[in-house]
Image 1 (cartoon, rainbow, N blue to C red):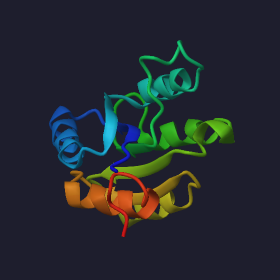
Image 2 (image 1 turned 90 degrees about the vertical axis):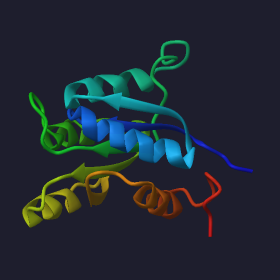
Image 3 (image 1 turned 60 degrees about the vertical axis):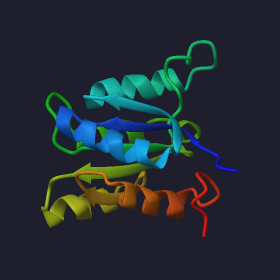
Image 4 (image 1 turned 30 degrees about the horizontal axis):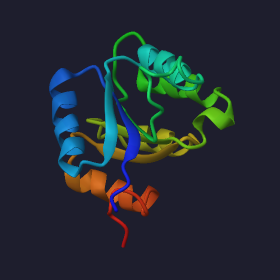
Length: 147
């Protein structure tokens, strides 16, 4: 039986990138919800909403995976992570954060690896093969992808 994730959250200000990322997620049919949020501040607001008990969270399904861009206007991915790290552990313990970026700066990857919530640092765009690899690693008993 194929057990789907509840929600995958895509946080990126680039519409074409979100389009490609969404296609990769849809190809695997691995989640009930794909939520696209174009800004880091809005993503933090969403996560706060998602942590509320029903019926307050009906529009904010709780994500298991966040794909986060680094370079965004107003608040970038690093600022998001700084505030995300301050959330209660109970709120973020079941969420896998993957940095998804066009940055080839090795300093960015080193910085990301020092942040406890960041599990992976990958280059855009998300592909179905990349997502399948991530799902096998972190959710081997879901989505029918176990080894």
